[in-house]
Amino acid sequence: MRAAIHTTFGDPTQVLHGGDVPQPAPAAGEVRIRTVLAPIHNHDLWTVRGQYGYKPELPAVGGSEGTGVIDALGEGVDGLKVGQRVSAASVHGTWAEYFIAPARMVIPMPDSIDDNTAAQLIAMPLSALMLLEFLQVKPGQWILQNAANGAVGKALAMLAKARGVHCINLVRRDAGVAEMAGLGIDHTISTAQSDWMAQVQAKVGKASIAAAVDSVGGRASSELMTLLGDGGTLVSFGSMTGEPMQLSSGDVIFKQATVKGFWGSKVSQAMAPEDKRRLVGELLQLAARGGLSLPVDGVFGLDAVAAAAKASLEPGRNGKVLLRPLCAR
Image 1: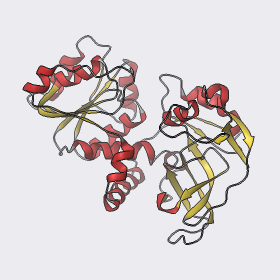
Image 2 (image 1 turned 180 degrees about the horizontal axis):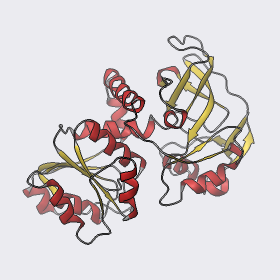
Image 3 (image 1 turned 60 degrees about the vertical axis):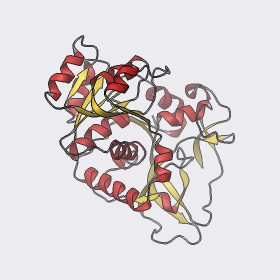
Image 4 (image 1 turned 120 degrees about the horizontal axis):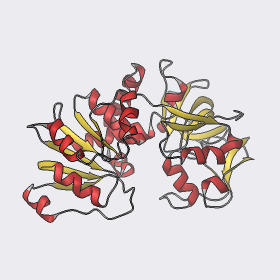
């Protein structure tokens, strides 16, 4: 079968290429899925670089999420059938004509959810929903996040709105405000504006910010802490700058603030199965009624994976880059 592979670790735009690999067979408890679409996530590209928590054996097929149709069932699989339309995330080798997924990781997709949405519905949106649960906020409360126009940030803003939580979304460029508005996301503020902190305080008014999500690190952490209300929680989700969090001990002490780290993999492992099913059900319902917009910036064939990786790394893109087997571009 055809797949997007790499035989060495390195720059994804240089080491990724199309190639032929054996078609996988499902073991007991697994299913084989004929791929329709598979997204390129940032963590996929870090895996290709050899700099992620998971390091595959080489040669390796990239990709960790995809949507398609079940093609074969392994021994002992119940509740799923050949020909069923499904999605799966936190798996390996989805940038191929076929991929294998544990049956327990497979989520049936209703016809009301289109392929572009189904291909990217689980990994980033589910992380965002788990993050929202992690914040323990209630309807009517305010939260604040930076790097809001990333995949998780956009999803968090939409999911918070659906739950009645007010979310202030910080972006680095003025153009990002219009981009977010185009997705139906409000309360977006550009930190390129000199008075952006005053704008945040004006939106909140007499209320306070109950929780903040930091995906930037460095000085940005201190800025979020300054805006956080008394007894609030600051969650470190990532570090775009690669710099340590800069926090004023005075703010932490006198606000009696809590600082936590969030790693989706660990949170997911610790989550009760019934809670995870509840969150997935919430995602499916929201997507089916059009309340979760997951735009696509481009679709590439497997043999054009290097160009797809380059497109995925372009700053300011408006959506995910997807791979489609046998798609010529």
